[in-house]
Image (cartoon, rainbow over the protein chains, first blue to last red):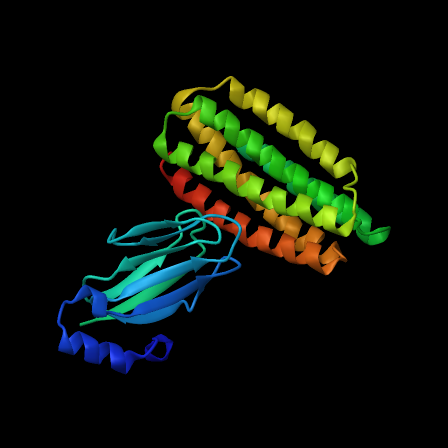
Length: 107
Length: 174
């Protein structure tokens, strides 16, 4: 969802100005609290980082259904991945598969 | 199914207890804390048995997570009862749970290889189902302290995740 992005216009502009430059991308923040990814759906552009912050007291994972990434996020820590391809990516927590989220990645 | 016995017994016990409590008194917070802690401890011990016996990587990964998560929940529970100055109170439900768990552990101890893995994971599915049902129907509605209720609700979400995780692993052994 576009409204979930932090400064989408600026991000698009930076991506347009510096195609493929890793440092110029945005960070899309997702919070994990009480066994839920919030927001559950986010948008990102290729080259952006998606960062999960785990506010729960148990370890979670953000695991792409298609195997693109698999990140383990210990309690009260943050982990990020850089999204490298366009598409809609569904992900879940391996330990608590009732936790699901989605990232829409555009060029 | 024989492996579902503990779980079903737990569910039946708590449903029966719930009815008894409805007629008399609801379980008190010190009893609820004791039941929840005992239920977690049972699953930690089941995981430790699985870690000693299993060679299946999915079963091992599941058991490691059970050991870790239930310890984390129980640590939270201990910190909370300390903060609230509540002493968990042993009760018939906790005692029955421990007794049934000991019987299940003895039963599983006789198995090995894939037979053990299947029996362990099937029991984990049944056990989490029973615990989750007891939490949502009896323990959470009976809890009077808001922080205890909130911790039980978070616990329920964690254990619902475990139930699904266990079902995924169990599907390997069908």
